[in-house]
Image: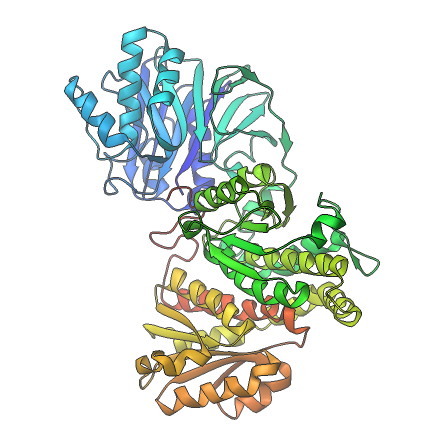
Length: 611
């Protein structure tokens, strides 16, 4: 969601802040701002709209000299997007500036108390309460760090905070609870950021803050304290991906670049985990006995990761013969879930910081379940709080609409199924060897699909004028249709729904009329004939059908429907890994034809860190 960057050191802060914010644009935002402490005190500039507006306003930062500063890109939660509601927020005294990700849940109560004490509020945000409350405590005790401790004890909710005070022009304070915040170390100074991409040009040496921690940053280093103000030694992590991975590299959009990166991403996710024809998950701490004793399996996730879980349900139940329940993270902890000792909870998150998923993880852990997380970001909160973690090694994903994160999560989940099934004795030798073989061949088959972009672009032109689209499929095709529909709606703004084909006659078919676009997924061999009967049903009511199938059925299907996409043959459980590629490209090219902002779709953010 919102982006934070902060710097104190030996260089001018404002250009560093603007560069960091530029690299956080992909997270989604509606306004931006920076605050810099210099010889003339605290100066703040902020503006609604794209970051370029702020850059122009400050002459690329030249108007704000100083070596200490904080910056922010805001995605509105409290108050409409405008210059006043943009961060940083400044206290009534003008001494304190605050940037904040998260939500202060008791802000209304605190605001009322401060108004009663004579404070005036200029914005509609919850964040301004932090600035004014800190100002109030600081005036009372004359100790900025004591005042900060009081603030953290008073506020409720989630926060990642970056704070500067004009009385302390050589240091910055950061604090974190239930919202991601990391520290960066370099010879030129110290950094805070909500995402490592903001720092990668300046340092590869980072540490992740934990809940309840507060950090004091200066040019000479960083001191971290726990909630009892005891010093904490942080584990440092080295970022090993190249900065070029976070650049477009000549592509028009990050999304297209990341779609085309998927074969290599799958190689990285699987190659080291398949050795001499066997799946080897050496990063798992679970013993074979613990694996055999697994009772029920829950998969908890949000958005596209939830759709990975839907595919995983079909595949894991086939391979493990265990009940698998897929749960929306935002619903899980409020459902009084029946989960406990002996159950395995698989948590899936690209960022490893998704707040709903984090809360669900903690609920499951509190009830005694074992937690296995599948995440991309090394050292993220979800990774640190899990019993076991498998990283997807997908590298940075910048486009808001996920592509390679989805594919690598699915690949890792399939590896888990094979590894567990082998130990449990529930996967046959034939299935195991065929799956391993095809997983190793998957990148080459993905590359074959991705060579057909011109044909998909041509079909996209025929579909771009539609305002309502229905995806239909059965079994794995239904699970895949959920992701295909989401990709289309989130970047093209077309109303799109996904339905299990067998449910058409139970109400949905009433929405089909002459010219309605129906995208029919027909890759799942055992139910191909039934899928064809559903195609006939919608065509009889005037639907325009675009079908996705395997090469085996492509010629036959082309005689029945006007538009056909196909993917190579592969083991059935792996078909969604190929099938998602043309659906991603179709959504991309439709959005392109409609003139949409593909990498930064409206109202969306890359990482959802508030409820």
